[in-house]
Image 1 (tube, helix red, strand yellow):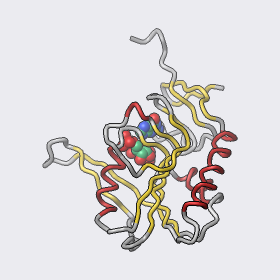
Image 2 (image 1 turned 120 degrees about the vertical axis):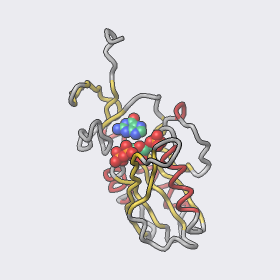
Image 3 (image 1 turned 90 degrees about the vertical axis):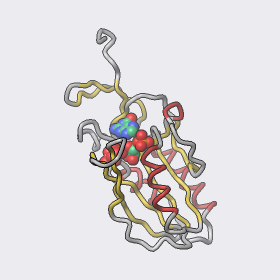
Image 4 (image 1 turned 60 degrees about the vertical axis):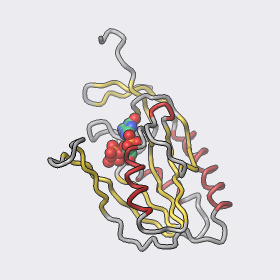
Length: 184
Ligand SMILES: O=P(O)(O)OC[C@H]1O[C@H](OP(=O)(O)OP(=O)(O)O)[C@H](O)[C@@H]1O
Ligand SMILES: Nc1nc2[nH]cnc2c(=O)[nH]1
């Protein structure tokens, strides 16, 4: 199946049923690993909202949940020009077992920034649970990536929380961009 979003066409890549099955397995793994602990799950908005909701239904250990947002804007006083900040980190994480929930890890830039921020709060442990990982695109070694739904090729994907130009987050399945072979 294909979908058109603005100027681009996407073809179906991961059906929701497959995502659900994999999410169930991730939940089982988390239930074993965090038995007798009370972890804090932190979903990274916007993209993680659907995955976080489905994942939490599979997690049966006592847990806290929260959401944060990493915002990027153009600063005038940095060499790269891009400044990131974290919004909504309002739980005391000192001594806690933190699990960051992401929809996708691509270059790893967002996560490595976020890890630096969260480590300053001195949690007991930090693990990352991401639905999608693009191993060929990673620019940072991130040893905290412990739970991965699917490793995917270096292609732009949309749906199930992920957007293209702000659209497509509400698609039930995940789609990938199919470049037009006639485009140069
Ligand atoms: O590994 P990276 O290359 O840093 O990319 C991954 C980040 O990109 C997406 O967020 P985005 O900044 O697009 O915001 P959104 O979640 O609101 O769509 C995604 O949710 C990750 O947080
Ligand atoms: N929608 C979307 N956002 C991303 N952020 C980093 N990689 C991606 C991707 O493939 N799709």
